[in-house]
Length: 353
Ligand SMILES: Nc1ncnc2c1ncn2[C@@H]1O[C@H](COP(=O)(O)OP(=O)(O)O)[C@@H](O)[C@H]1O
Ligand code: SF4
Ligand SMILES: [Mg+2]
Image (cartoon, rainbow, N blue to C red; front, side):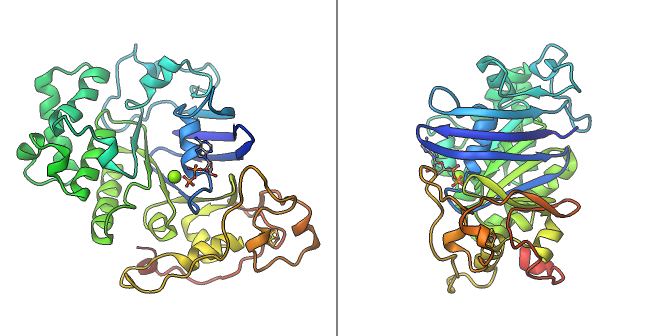
């Protein structure tokens, strides 16, 4: 059973249909990359799935099933914890039908979050120690002393030098990279089954970004955490993910394992993201972008939602019909009438870093 699986997720806010049937899943110990330009629905997917966005603001339908806790790594709680509040059908729990209290208990404990801007996610008036130990005391019932010991361990784990001193620091005393490492330490503190990182390295320079990605990869190997890594940058996603989902206009337009996605990408939008990804060594150089802009979820075109920007539109159905997400090969799904691999080149690992 996957650590987290999102099934046919629809989100509507007023007259905007923001997600239109998004499905994906991530296995324990694996990384799912979600990629797409700003506005494609990446954040909404995880916010709606975890109940951070919902009624009355948004109408949400579908399922978001959190699997049984992973057995590797440390224990994630006692028998009375929310982790054991499972459904009879296969041991998962649907986050969309959980009570608000149940969802709050899951967040932070079984699902950890890291968002783009640690300056707003960290509390400016609390020191690192307090922010790290809060969840340990609240969710795991640790004593202050035990939580402090664990906090030191966590800071070390995410590669923060001199953790004793850093425990006493306030967020403004840390660099952007250090703050983001602290966020990751907090997100991992209760040994969650799933870590959701939404543009977690976007604000950082490429060197720090690469260090943080290395740290996450290393932690994931040790802890068996499932990671959902969200980025607008296909290069970043390619360096970390096992499986990649490409979102456009609130739908999955392509999905495959990372090697297939890079070598046999087939949707013209994926090709556009591929061509426009920033590369190491080209900092400051000219970046290609996909001409045009993403569709407005309040007035979607009648045909393919990528139609306006598509360089391959030739099928008469492109203007009038919405393509379905169909398998091009086992495990490789594409939503396009012209779905044929547009490139079949071996993957150069340097290119995805
Ligand atoms: N609170 C909201 N109210 C109305 N529309 C929203 C809200 N949040 C996001 N949207 C819209 O939903 C779409 C998807 O947004 P988002 O998930 O944030 O995209 P991404 O994370 O890929 O940049 C966008 O068109 C955005 O304008
Ligand atoms: S369905 Fe047509 S317009 Fe849409 S991406 Fe494929 S070729 Fe382009
Ligand atoms: Mg976002």
